[in-house]
Image (cartoon, rainbow, N blue to C red):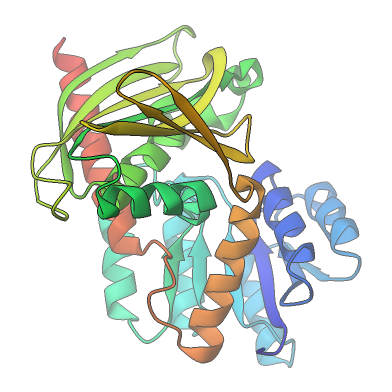
Amino acid sequence: MSKTFKIAIIGAGGIANAHMAAAKDSGGRVEVVAVVDPIQESRSKLVAAAGQAADFADVDALIKARKGGLVVEGVLVCTPPSVRVKIVEKCLKAGLPVLSEKPLASTLKDAKKLASLARKYKKVPTAIGYCHRFTPALHEMNRMAASGELGTIVRFENFFACDLPGHQSKWFSDPKKAGGGAFLDMGSHSIDLFHAMIGPGKPIASVFSNKWKGRTETAATVVLKGSKKRNANIGAGVPGVIISGWAESSRFTVALVGDKAMVSYDYENPEVITVKDLLGKADVRPIKTCGVRFTDQLVAFANVVQIKANNTGLATFEDGLAAAMVGEQAAKLAKKK
């Protein structure tokens, strides 16, 4: 086992707490040693959760401390996407590996800049936090599809939706700060899952709706179409239905539908997957909970940085750019309606 991987969290908002918990659940593999946030109260709370960590108001102070001897081997960028480019550039220039929260950026232009930076500093590892790639049930669904148990795959279905009224007054729904709403936030995960499970896709239909005047979309229904054959059971042209929402009943499900059977996973019932035959007979099978996804992602990042591990399952900045391009296309389609 490799030594403890020491990271800094940049941005002490809500998602940072999930990564802090993941580090604590890593059995000593990952340790948060620094927190960066311009708001003292926010970073102090995260430092308290860490137990012991240095805190800084900005990235420049972190990099200066690292030059002075603070051991930091990588950073988790958990800031709003609109402010990421300069932060990531400073980290990469300083030789600090970056795991950035999703979406990669608030605009396609910035996503392209970040992907370009990853190519420029190619010796410094970069990854984007599409944590659902580390959900055990989805690994099993991929295996079942490849094995032929489901037959030929005819559809991908994904619902990531819930009621988040607090987002109406936060940066998440501010068009200038976020760049998009429910689809950019939750739907970027969905696009990446389609790419990871089916292959590259292109949006062919898109409908957005908005419950909050002057804010970003609160609901999105998008249909993708796969453009390449993945394996013998997943051909080109497989459709994907993606539902994203911030103001509706909670649903967090992924399904692969085949012409022999279908398999589905419900994140709200996280320890089982359900396989149904063509007559609807259900076979409920135990599976490792989705709760491990953040920790497994952090450990994969640690392995990439410390031991140059390959094929870890981490999403790259190029994957983030691919999702951003699909998101931009879907948004344009929605505006045409």
